[in-house]
Image 1 (cartoon, rainbow, N blue to C red):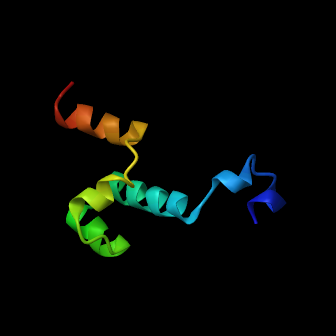
Image 2: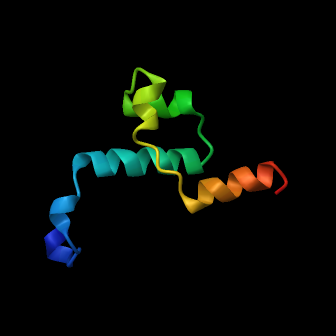
Image 3: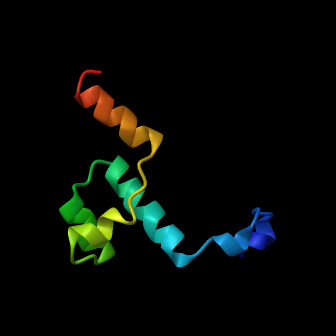
Length: 68
């Protein structure tokens, strides 16, 4: 499917990419880790942590919360 829209290197995209993207988006939208774990059916916090990507938006939210 990605090849049909001229996505570079489509073989590098896996289902884990979508899980990581979904988890990161939910975190950016303000859901807490317990809600994200339930959504993604992760039982242990350490499992979820492997999927979260610390995006610029998350870093900016953290800096704002810390008044940096």
